[in-house]
Length: 264
Picture 1 (cartoon, rainbow, N blue to C red):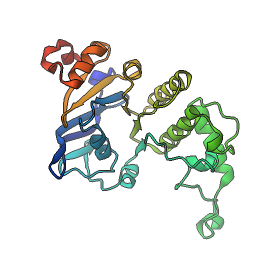
Picture 2 (cartoon, rainbow, N blue to C red):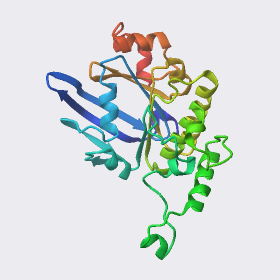
Picture 3 (cartoon, rainbow, N blue to C red):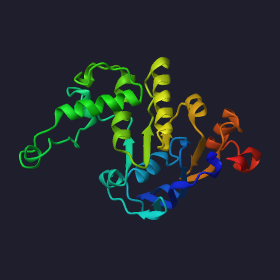
Picture 4 (cartoon, rainbow, N blue to C red):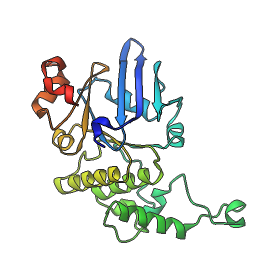
């Protein structure tokens, strides 16, 4: 099944968010298809951050609706999003440097020992956490030898790998990645792009927010262009040039000027 015919699994319609006299989202729509990497791009003030916050449960829109697998969602916090299998990796990663890789992967969701020790004494099952952490990291081909290694000793790309592994370990429906290659060198940036591809290979659709247009065009199946609080176009990166995409994003060109948009 091609991406163009894949079913929509995560959808927003008519999202509106106002901050006093400023309208950040002005009736924006959004569609994520099964098995795709969808990039969201937009200039400063386009409403990109507000859209991501709405999709991740960090913001409650004033108007509009969200739907996951055809069912309407009512999320009031990121915890609600997690309950629905939507996991987000923010740009600051939110990892604990002094804690081990295994502890970071299960932070806030620690595995308890079986039987009475876990049920009543709440003892953590460190052995199982180490084994499962190693399996998740191996699945994403992140080359770290010991899950007991403190995250603070890792490189930037490896820390990003820990954050991505944590999200995919618990995501059932969607993974949202906010600027995952920011501040990384070429080698580590490519490593993270490979990880994102492996997440998709596992069957999880990915929402990618990035200012790095070469990375967007390398990895995205479709590109959602946000401008002035609205979705102005969804384009196919294999049927449109990077310069034309940027022109639509900045308003230098209207979407109607580009025939390629009809194929996205």
